[in-house]
Image (cartoon, rainbow, N blue to C red):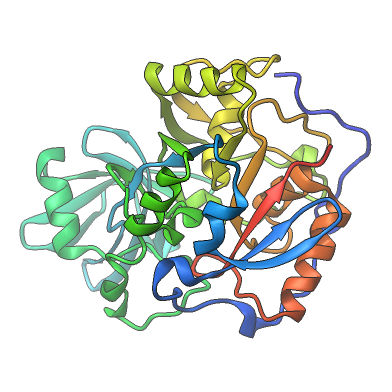
Length: 353
């Protein structure tokens, strides 16, 4: 790819900001579409709510939404007398997943972790990154049912729940249009939509199309490199069907805007677009890393939540709307008591010219 330019030597610290802990949302807005929405234009910051979207978007906009479905990817088990927490990360083969485990240092290759009398996993590999590769004792057609029974929603680490309390998030940490199982983190911008809001958008002439990007736990990993060029981005599996690509290309040819719902949708769209912005059908892994200097080819506007300091997602929105503009927007949002992160409020971002 040639879309990333390097006009300067970006540092991770360039994307830091101070966030009071009380701004981190611990529970979602109810109803979903009553979350607040900050419309970030080049010259205006405007306060709205998610339910205002039909009036903020253009009647011929095309919304692109991620239909991935979060699985109950956090498991608690035993290796002998040792209690083990396992967070599934990325499927590698039938019955076989990469995972994070605690306490990882006490686990060995060939150890068996028992989650229930009829449900266990063997450790096949330990990686330097802290991951383990495990193979479940049951075939895939039984695995999802056992995850539903014994697993918990894989809430991010900044949402605090006691033991067993995350079960209450089973439905709420899921979009209403989730379809394809495989994510271990929610595409959080989509959490704000309700069936009623989708109907209102359609009544306004705002169409929508879906793609799939199975969000991995790597989305929460911090950037440890001092220089962005040295950061290795995690890979996630995604698919854009022939029909979806044709619909998006048709919209672009007609001069209609492509509005990505979430950074996951945006990253996959940008992965599949050529230099002219023409979208190709796509099925495979993407590890695209977007930061200022990137030339966007596929997306014209972005709906997304507020992101962590020094995270790859904050770097992405700074690339999209401008670093200084996003610093100002986040400073304003903190002062106005917007709620941050997965269960927080949202932004509607216009692309910097």
